[in-house]
Image (cartoon, rainbow, N blue to C red):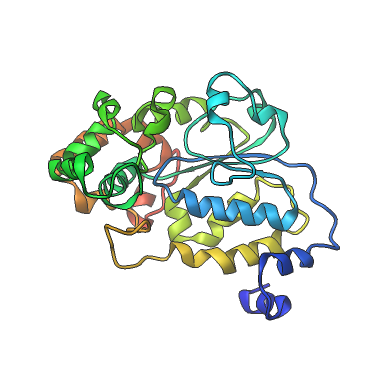
Length: 300
């Protein structure tokens, strides 16, 4: 069913409550056990809104670091508490790997972005976009901006990352547990990518082919209303990843893939290509498909 048909069915009041009423007489979805891993600066807030919508429409319990009522207790988790194994529902988006004995028995969504674009996006978050303990483009944040983007992106994959103060979208709050950007991607390769129950999706597909990306996300769930859910989620969220004019001060700065090619000098790109080499290869960012379409083809 297309967007217009669903809008007609929803009527003038198209809030979450009216949509939930559409599914009120449907059988409740089976007990779910889904975890969504990702990274910072990979469209994780879009992923959050999509997961939240899926769960609300289908009455699935949703645990997220973006929710006050159902957060994920990371301090306890890093201290050894297996939160995920003790609950049913959907957990995410988790922007770094956390272990759980339940991972082999649940569906795993792994949503990743070209790490070269991730570290570029982190520069703008750290210097200009994210709120934090000091104002944007002041103090040490301004000093980082003046040091330049090339220095910053290389710091994000080296021991110098640990010298950065504050978080501002770079994930340093839990840096002693999750490491550098390189460490986080490598952990996903080691722990998640090759699991038979992992569904690997990309930021690039989310931006360039939202319906096919969403179909993969929905396949992680056991839903009685998958087509209806897809229609509503697409109508509400597909436009949130549409490309706009770049604004370094905006949270949604620029969404198009391949940003590192425009922002970094050739030497820095070569260093990142070497540093992330096996990761880029495994995730499909060195593939002809990525060069042709902008969407990586993992394993090619």
